[in-house]
Amino acid sequence: MNNTDGNAIEKGALYVVATPIGNMMDISDRAKKVLGEVDFIAAEDTRISGKLLMLLDIKKPFVRYYEHNKEAMHEPIIEKLKSGQAGAIITDAGTPAISDPGEFLVKRCLGENIKVIPVPGASAAIAALSVSGMPSRSFVFEGFLSDRNSERKKQLEMLAGEKRTAILYCAPHDIVKRLGELYDALGDRELFIARELTKLNEETIKTTLSKAVESPPVERGEFVLILGGKKDDAEGEFWSSMTIPEHVAYYEKITENTMEACKLCAKDRGLSKSSVYSEIIKSKSNP
Image 1 (cartoon, one colour):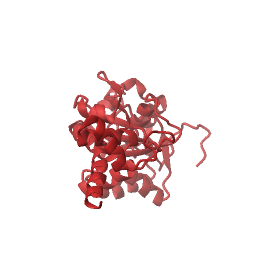
Image 2 (cartoon, one colour):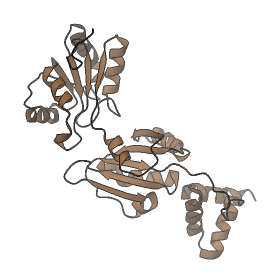
Image 3 (cartoon, one colour):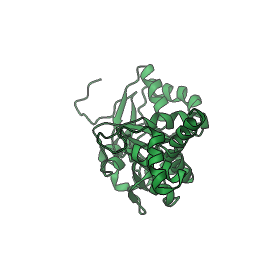
Image 4 (cartoon, one colour):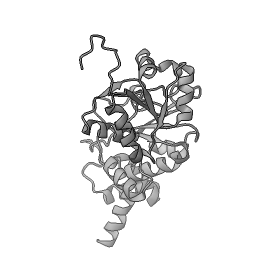
C-alpha cells in the first residue's frame, strides 16, 4: 500500500509504539496520532496504559498482551490485523519488543507477512548509555539477567570476557544481589548506574563495581547498569609477565593477607576475586 501521506495509518499493520519511561512530555506527536487512529492497542498492563491514554484523551479498545498470555493471544491479534484492522503494541514504559514479550508478536506478524511499523521514542537503555560517558560505538545489550541460576551463570560467563560496553536492566529487589554476582564474575569494572530515568527521583551514579557492592544504591525504581568492557592486559605493567600466583605472592609480601592480595591482583587484571583465589588453590594443589 502506498500512502501520499507518510503519516496515514495503514490498515492491517502492527505499529510498535514507544511510550515515555517517566516524563510524559517524551511522548511524540506521531505516537499520539498513531494511538489515536489505530483500531486496537495491545498492552502489557491495561491499568498503566489506561492512565497514559487518559492523559492523551484517547479511548481505544485494549487487548491485554503480556509474558504469561502471549502464546494464547497471538492468533486473536493476528486475526484482527488480517481482517484489515490497524493495531498498536505498547509496553508499560519505553520501546516494545526490547527485553519485552512484544518481540514474539513482531516475529509472528512478520511470519504471516503482516507489516510491522516502528514508531520510535524513549528507550531506557539508550537514554542511560547516552549520558554514561562509556564507549558507545559498539556495545551489547543483555537486558535482565535470568532468574534461573544455570542460565544466569552462562550470561555472567559471557559478560566476563566481553570487551564492549554492556547494558543491563535490573529490578529494585534484585540490585544488591546482581551487583554482587557481577563483581564476583567480572571483577572490578567501570560502572554507570541509572535509576528512575526521566522520573522525579532520577539518579545517575558513575562508580565501579567494587564501590557499588560496598555502598549499593537505594533499592527503589528500575535500574539500568552500564558496564565497562574487559580491558586487555596492559603492556609495561609490572605484573604483565607474572603468573596469577606470582602476582598474588607479590601483594602478599606487602599486605601479609592472602585475600587482600587476591583482591588487588583481581583489580589489576580486571578479573573476579573468586577466579583469582581459585587459581591460587589450583596452584597449591598442583605444585
